[in-house]
Image (cartoon, rainbow, N blue to C red; front, side, top):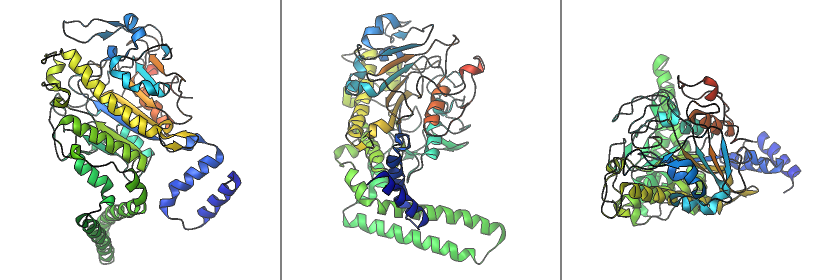
Length: 477
């Protein structure tokens, strides 16, 4: 179809009464007709680990001797040396560190980002909402309140979908173990005092997101019953609205909006049944397993299918908690103990932490491979999806937040700078000229998503405001 024919199609559709289900399709046609890859759908997958993301373990092998130094105590991880000026190095001639090796096939989509600080957040076991919201909140065991939306919550508003945000986790708060319910881990918020829920059970997450593809008689009956109930609830509320007035009528408006939203979601899901059925992950024993690694793999499968099927454009995976024990990796010590350098049979705490990090990176690589296999516009879905790997505890167990590393994989169309061979970016150390903060990274993501802002969260009062404003120009075109 020629660009002119496409434009005529869009004009005709705009003048007619078109099903909302066709809007994403028409928008994509419009983008392709205009040759505007920036208008391709944008998606984000945040993968949040606990107990810190060790900066020294993210340094390419050829740079490690120059940029890392031994830890302060025996048995503790090596540390990153701060630099005096911006370091921007191509990964072309540098081998990735061991725990990032699974990302080697995606080097041209990879940015290793170091040197940012987040001292506006609390340190310790978790920065809670602050890790993606840039403010101080909570205590060691309590997330406190969401003082403002987190970056994944804001992106969910900016990139609407049937499910604005999908949260997947193993446990609840940072010191809790495996759960099988909906939990509020205290790291994501859609708005002030509005935390986002996470599904801890892979089986329930699958049912909630892909239930439309249920094939058994019980599944079909449950779908039919839910449809009838929602239709009747909307009808009943509308009928009651005609009989009351005043404040009660206004309350019913909110009830009606809620029920209509649920009904519309069900109808949209029904309209997308073929797509959902095609991309829904294959359910196997790992969805019901109590082994932590099985459940994590299942959550990554669900996240991938959710993005590919178009059910959501923003997914956050809380990859573990401090009380998780990686038995599937042969580690018989919970993450909390490893953070305090407690050894396990056959390996040091550092080796165990590296094994855990590599396992999580392997899951990210599986997502990237599946996204790269899906054509989109002039490229693939990976070109328009950014995976952000970070820790809610900054650089280490009991993080200080002076250094907050990130692994960025994928892209955001023409909004995001990518090297043909990948990049290692390290900003000057805390307080040095040219230093930047995690707020600047989140400004960059929002800018790329069409929501530019100069300030995100709260300022670190010990830094010049100019170091905390605007996006990172090194990341954006």
